[in-house]
Amino acid sequence: MQLTILDRIDRPAEDVVALTLRGAHGPLAPWEPGAHVDLALPNWLTRQYSLCGDPRDRERYRIAVRHERLSRGGSDYIHRYLRPGRTLEVSLPRNTFPLVPAPSYLFLAGGIGITAILPMLRAAADAGASCSLVYAGHTYASMPFAGELRAAYGDRVTVVATGHDGRPDLAALAAGLAPETVVYCCGPTSLLDACEAVFPAERLHVERFRPRPRTFAPDTAFDVVCARSGRTVPVPAGESLLNALTHAGLPVPAGCREGVCGSCEVTVLEGEPEHRDDVGAAPGRMYACVSRSRSARLVLDL
Image (cartoon, rainbow, N blue to C red):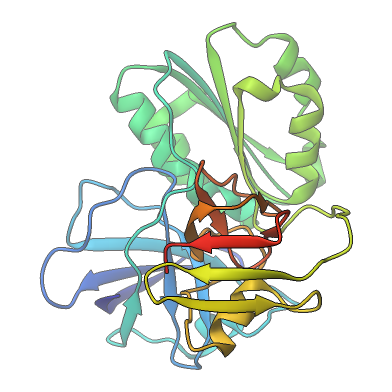
């Protein structure tokens, strides 16, 4: 974890605060567009937020948080109680939504999903790539950084207030997509599902805040062999791998516990994982919070 000081709080839109975090002991860890951090709050909750500042600024991180009406305690605490000067711990940046090199990009953001997309647009423009952004939200007043984006990128940015203008015509965007264009999308589930229905899967990159509703085979029990510690941990059918390891005294860092943030990644040495995450685990990796095992025995580098 890195120790930071809450340098300032801005309000870039209705019900949204932007937090600028300054390194308490010098430069912060580097990051690339698409990265997020775990923010440890004083009320003992840990939440994940996309970095939406400038990766070239090693002195500060910027995140933005919408006040959710059905908050689980994270956004509510940030909006009600955090004040400048507070010391906060943040994780090292983690990137499960990296920007791949391409000559042309179409970025699509819905609401607070702009936080992940904003640094990507900046990086693409700085690299000289052809790029455009369609940014949708219910009202103009509810859309953070809309003015900042339009001032910086002009007609490359289209801002759509769905309550007034209706939803963006994704089918028309897909029909006019150049062969070399890569599409990045971040926002609510409805937007991501609509994008997955019209854009080619091999050119579409999405980041989800909530897992997709999916159905899996019934859970079965399996054993986990922890190669470094020499321990064998049984994982019953009714318990997650993450919880079984924690109860055995072998805790794995975890954030969302829903398979969308990537903080609980573990290395698989033997066995066949059953991936249930929405991140897309790399070969030889799995996410312990939701994923299980297809084989009776799984060997992990723990």
